[in-house]
Structure formats: structure tokens, C-alpha cells
Image 1 (cartoon, rainbow over the protein chains, first blue to last red):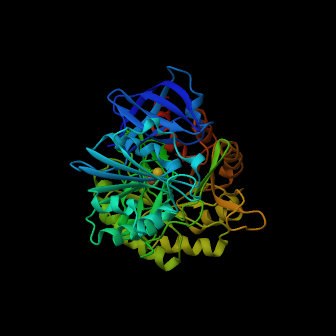
Image 2: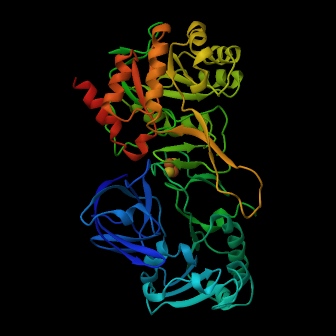
Image 3: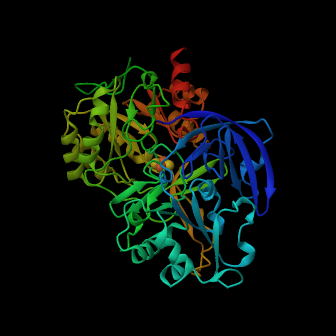
Length: 248
Length: 276
Ligand code: FES
């Protein structure tokens, strides 16, 4: 069901390099689901929650995002929550793997299970996210391409090598990814190599693509999966990572 | 009652002059939760072809001020699958469904039109021609679509009203949709990764408010010359704009991609017009 809601903009404050923007709304989106907000521009913009509470949600947006220009109390028409989010019910050990810039939509997952490991990849130390949104109970591994912090290399290299990152994948009940979509086929193969026969939905991946309608009507958001084309807005945007291994 | 196909033996009567344009409303009940369909005249489906089509590669969406380009490649699962998934919805609807057929090849269009004959709820076909179609080819597609029983609307490409509109009306189109969104291009950011040289352009169909004055210009020019009903389509975002199209002689209006931003606009315009 597509729900229409009016959200109330409450605050926007800088959290370099992003902005923290909070809305009040009766039904906020769960992790991986999204709202389509009528902000500036000719089509609605998908908003993924970086924090969720019973009265609303917050996003982390880049400077210049139209949500950062709202005035407190502004009412914003939203459609949603839309799409299929992360399916992590009853999981004990969660592994969250993300590129630094794509961490915000995964932040709500960090408080959802008993044991959580977070793997964040960035090109260099300066690109790593600030730690204050990461709960202290979360075990953190950082990867930088240039070796300026944490493990040196790329996610794929660390997942394929004898590394603590691969070890985390071995013991996890569920792994949630947020990366550039073009990387998912290779990451799916890394997961297969580490886990032999992973169950369906063991590894889940968020795909962020343009979603103008959110209703399954415009066909702009189609993505290729092993079982044919799917719509990110209604069949996803969280997919079984192994389904995204279209090269394999 | 508005008759969209007065010369057809079954006709295509609609109660209200407002409907969604092809490509913006899905195939079935995608907007069921948001829209009161009963105030609409008809529902036009997303483009469908006899065989499945995949989505286009490359950029599918780009904004440019208040306008945007969409290039989907008209992906669809093929007519048989669409029928399997949506014919029950079409049959249940209290208003006509107009199936938008992509003009792939005349034999495929003929086969698709035959498959659609007798499908409950389908009251007409809208034939979507590719840009630059020649008169002869366009008439061959129309002839093929007439292999089924339904009235045929032909959606004319933006740049081809001349010479297609009059020719298709003479060839037996029951109504014409003026027009498909124009094709346009926008510069892409340089591809630094692949070090490509030269200007890179994204292409697609253009949507946005600037199309409305262009539409009014074309309606004013062409409706007096055409002997078949015209359905106006392109950039209509207000009741005033819809009303202007009707006053220029359009039999009905189609609301295009503005629906994605304001799904209720379709019913708002329909209700306001029906209250007049
Ligand atoms: S956003 Fe329109 S079909 Fe997915």
C-alpha cells in the first residue's frame, strides 16, 4: 500500500561533511525503506532514514540538498514508507559493510541486533565517517585504499584474503551491504567464497538508484538481477546480494 | 459522454475528459491506493510490446531545471505476461483501459492487437510510433493494429505532427494523441574514469512545464485540420491548462509525468473539470 503522509521538518544541523536533517512523521521508514519527499525539483526525492524513532526520522544529506533549506515547521508531502527494506528479524550477529559515503542509510541497523560488526571502506582516512553516530558496542573495522587508517586495500580484497573482515563474514548471521551497485556482482562472489552455501537473504544489498515515482509505474529504476529485471522501488531497494551477481 | 472513436463500430465512449498518459501510470493498479479512478475518463497503460523488452543502458533520468529527461527503453515483460498479471485489474475497472502498444513491427503489432481483442475492460489501443516514422510505415502500423477489434488512437511523435497527423486520420486512425514527449539531449558530466573525449550527451524524452505552451500551439494549429478527435498530451499541470486544451477542441487530455510528483493532480484536474 502506498501511503501519503505530511512530515514536519524539525531541524537541520551540520555534521561535516553532511547535514543531519530531522522530520516528524507518523509512520517513519524502516532501515532500507524510503520516503519520496516533495521538496524542490520536478520529481520527488527518496529519503533513507539514518535514525528512526517513534515520532519520526532523520536523514544525513549532502550540503545543498533541498531538505537543508527548509524552515523549521515546514510541512513536506511524502509518499511512503516505500519499498522492501533490510530483513534482519531474529538475527543475532549482524555484519554491516559499507562504503563511507553510503553509511547513513545503514546507521539504524547498528542498534538493531545484539552483536554488530561494521566494516567501512574509504579511499583515505579523511573520508572515513565521524565515529559519534556509531554506538560504542559496535565492533568497527575500517579499510582505506591508501592504508592511511585501518586495513589497507579494498573491500573485495579484504573479503577474499585471510583477514578479520572475512572472519566477520564467516560468523555473521546476516550481512548488509551498501556500496556502488556496480560492485555487487564481485562482492556477491566474495560472499560465496567465504560462506560456501549462504542462505537466501544471508547477504542483503541496498541499491540506491533514481526513483522518480516510487510506485512501480515509471520503469526508471529497473535493475538487472539473476532472475531478470526488477524495480528498485518496489522489488527493492534492498535485494538479496547473490541475486545481484549478474556476471556469475 | 465523450466519444473518442465516433467512426468505430464499437466507439470509445468516456465519461470524463482526463486520463493518465502512457508511461506514467503503470500497467495496473500501481496508483490504486492514491487515486480515485472513478473520476477519470480512461486509464492508458504503460507501453507494451508483443515480446519482452529490457531497460535501456546508460543514464535513464536527468533533471534540467523544472524539466527532466527520461530514457527507459520502454522495458516491459511482453504482452502475454502483462495480460497474465493485469487483465483481472482491467476487467474489474469501472472505466475503460486503453493499452499503449509500441510500434515494433507491423506483424508484431497485428498479433498484439489480436491478442487484446476480447480482453475484458480493454476499450481501445493507443499506438506509440517511433520518432521520424514515415507516413507509409505509420499507416502500415495502423493497419496492423486494426487487425484487432479495438478503436485505435495513434500517439504522434512531437516532431512529426506534420506529415503524420493528417495522413493517419485519413488512413483510418480513430483518434490522435498530440503528442508523445519530444526527444531531447542533455550534456553529461565528463567521464574522467574512461577519459572519453568530446561532448557526451544523455538522450531521452523531455517532460516539464515548457511543453504546455508548445502543446497549445500545436493544438491550435492542427485540431481545425483534423477530422478525428484529438487527445492533448504534454506538460499539462493545471486545470487551466487542461481547460485550454479542451477549449481548443481537444476531446480529452492526458496528464504526464507530473503525476510522479503529484499523484493527486490527475484526480484534482478531473474533479475540477467535471464540476464546471
Ligand atoms: S521509481 Fe518508478 S518504477 Fe521504480
